[in-house]
Image 1 (cartoon, protein in one colour):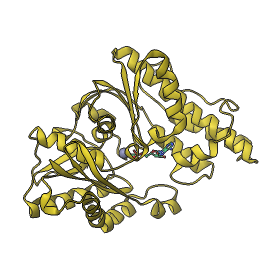
Image 2: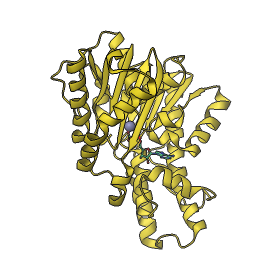
Image 3: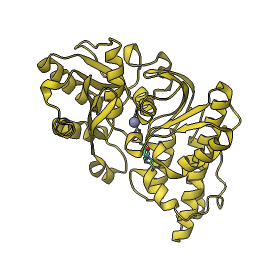
Image 4: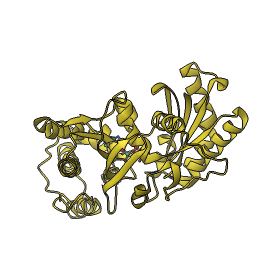
Length: 347
Ligand code: KG4
Ligand code: ZN
């Protein structure tokens, strides 16, 4: 099926076309320049910018794919979770499209869409596996059985890994978005110079990053901001290492406890090179297959939405025109019941 995907859950306006499991186009219009003066995403600004750009981004996705409006066979849109004003823009636009084109609509859960990138990255050649989802709003481990079918194994009790990186970067004055800024600052740094805590390492598959964030705040309050480039690099590298080591440890524990032999890592933080290297080093000696999608599929995009949408549409899933966006509650056809416990707003 030729499906147009639309993603507006946070600060990227995205549209993509997939056709029989293949990505024909994927367009992302980042709002970073509008939010960076504030040091984080401003929900109202996000909604307004989506409203301004979503039509142009969808047109660009069609043009890049060489597909006309009339050739589309379905529309997939992210309905939850996310910033509610931002989600509503995409959902309303999708409804307008299906009304005018007379084609089916399907709603997609943003988290299951991130997990979908493991299928996209392997041409659907991936067996049931553990999925580590690490983004700005979520950090969770899933048992992924098939596209759109996953159950929760563990999740963060407070902050997400991406949030911990973003807030640390903000505190250190490194800018927004924080994950890539902290990664750049950490280059050449000594990851063992500053001893940051590895939270909940021995306590099951849940995560907690708020204590780590506090440890950095206490360090800065006591010692001030780094006074040299080397000290900044060491501090950033030490903090990043604490996040990476925790994620790797929990992911490996999840794989061991589930008995599967494949691990996927998806979401914006999966773009981090240190995390990718550390996971490869942990998986290789155990013969575990590691699936990490290319970077453009890790951060928010609509290819993952269109792809999961196509799988759902092929299974006969359809949404009525009364479908609502939801910041938090994930249920019904677009979400595994289990996802409900991990949704905490944000994305
Ligand atoms: O999946 P995503 O684009 O949006 C959400 O659904 O949240 O993830 C965004 C998160 C942000 O916290 C951002 O700082 C982080 O992913 N991120 C990174 C990198 N690129 C994006 N974190 C670490 N290293 C990166 N290279
Ligand atoms: Zn996301």
